[in-house]
Length: 310
Picture 1: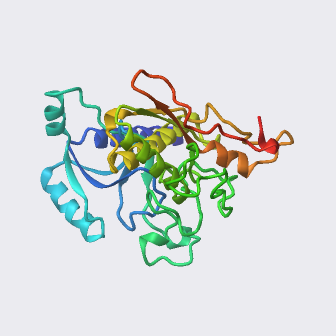
Picture 2 (picture 1 turned 180 degrees about the vertical axis):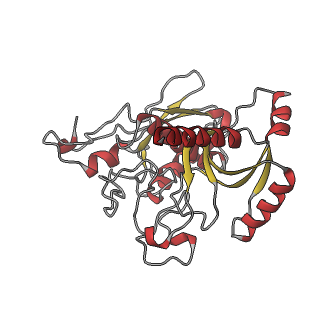
C-alpha cells in the first residue's frame, strides 16, 4: 500500500515538473551573473532557477496563460522586483528560429524557497540586502553564495585576500601588466583588479590592432561543471569592463578554464586548506597579441610564494 502511495506521488511530482517546463509563459523575476540563495525573493513562491547559454542565472515563475502572467508580473513588481517581465516561449522560439536555433535556459534543479526568518543567520530581516547575498557585488557579511557551497565550507571565514600579488601602483604605471583576482564564488571586478584593467585599456587605446586573450580560472571548491560556468562569468565580467570603456569586443577573446589550471596549491600536502593558494587560483590572466598574432612581452609572469607552489 505504502509503495503504491510513494509511486503515485513520485509520478505526480515528475508530471508537475514536466508540465511547468512546457508552460508557454513565464514571469522572469530577475537575472544575475551569480546564483542567489533561498529567501532572496522574499515571500514570492514557485521561483525556479535557470542558466542560459551565456551563463546568466534567470529566475522564472512558470504560468499557463498570458492573463495569469500579467497578474503575476504585477505581484512580483509590487514585491520590489521592478524589472520583472513576461516571457512568451512560443513567440520567442519563433522569432529566434527565424535567425538561429533557440536555446532556452535550462533548469539547474534549484527552486528558490520563500524567505523564512527562522532560516536566516543575519542580524536583520527587513530588506533583501540583509539576506547574505548581493548579485555581483560584495556581501556585507563576507558570506559566500550558498549555491555550490556545502556544510563543510567555512561560511563565516573571509576567504578573500586583497592585493595577494604585487599590484601596479596606479593605472599610469610603466611596469608590466599583472593578472587580476576574484573573491570566492564571485565574478565582479574588484578594486585592485580595476587598476590593472585600466592600464590594459590605455594600451589597447594606443594600439587598436592588438588583441587581448582573457584566460579565466577558479579554485577547486565546487563541482567542475559549476566552476566551468563560474570561470566563464569571470571572463564575461572582465570583457564587459573593457568593452564598456572603449575596447572593441572583436579584439577580446574569452577562454574559461574552470578549475583545470591552478597555479598554486588549493590544499597543502598535510591536508590543510590554503587560503592564499585558492585566492591565487581565482584569477584572470591576459595574453596580448599584435596584429600578426605574436604574444607580446607586456604581461608579468605570476610569481607564486614558495609555501603554496605546486
